[in-house]
Length: 433
Image 1: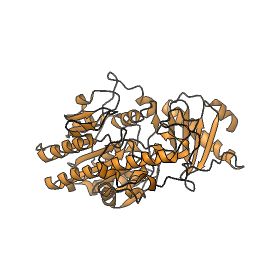
Image 2: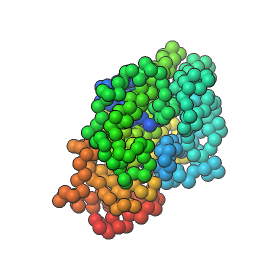
Image 3: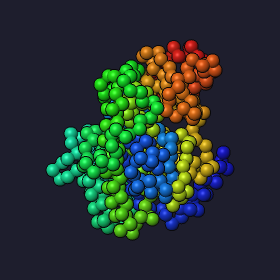
Image 4: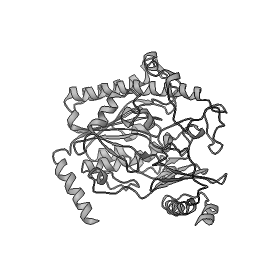
């Protein structure tokens, strides 16, 4: 084990000598699932700039958000990212007890930090942890059409101006947080026209005129669920993503015009995904794959271009990864783990992924088997997400399932201890372990 760690360290040390002063452009969208990126396999998506980042960098195709304590799932996701603490520790973060944040850690390592766009994290006020701020947008917009223009355009324009006018000797960390494609999904007609609603193909886990999933509390559609409504929402969502992609192209061009593109690590991600009818869910407060996964792309000199990593990771693992890539020091511990061993192909992914929503949903994934637990209803769902990625076949009644469930629940029990998860799963443990 020590030998492998030494090899990883030497690998990145050799490649990164001379890159210690690289800039960081961190782009984060809101509510964007893997389905809304062309490079992730949806050929109908028009995302040429995000796709090019994927072509020049590495894409993590199974990056998870651990869960939420709030119907606004972005708050837990972004709080975990900014402060590096697992879900239930992050829930307790406030202005008084907040640990050192990601931008503060980078500042301590010689970075000039900047943010424009959405801020929706617990803890310290945004203006106290960044050196400079642009327009700070709320978590939920009433409209994208502000007096100064469309919010997506404003966020991108401010990022472009920051890069264009940056004259500081320090490297920069620019956190560009788009509200898109979060509701209200408003953009111009030319983007809607790219995605005719009646031509949109929904996944096999969307079944027309079926009741909403009773295990999921927060639903944002009439009951029963109608495919036509979901097609319209996907149209709006995809249009918003393509609008944002065009503006991401402007930001990337500004890096090239400035002559710093090759000296900038670029991260593209989202805080979580969203369900548009899959498994009877219209929303994001669930543990199905479209909602709990999101794109994670890294473009850096050390990564293999146009590569994909299928190992299951957490979206928030990106923070310690940046520190490893740049050989930066931080005395603040993090609960998440660096992805650099996976990037160098010398490391293994976590043995399991823990997922949680409030006290009414728990999930555990290991060896391509995914168990979803509903403590309040007593229901269980078991999926083989390698062979059934859309989670259409609940295997809970199969003869071999009891052994699989027992193994997964043992891992869940260990995760509950690790994360200080107090939800009572005793009945499930007693039945299967």
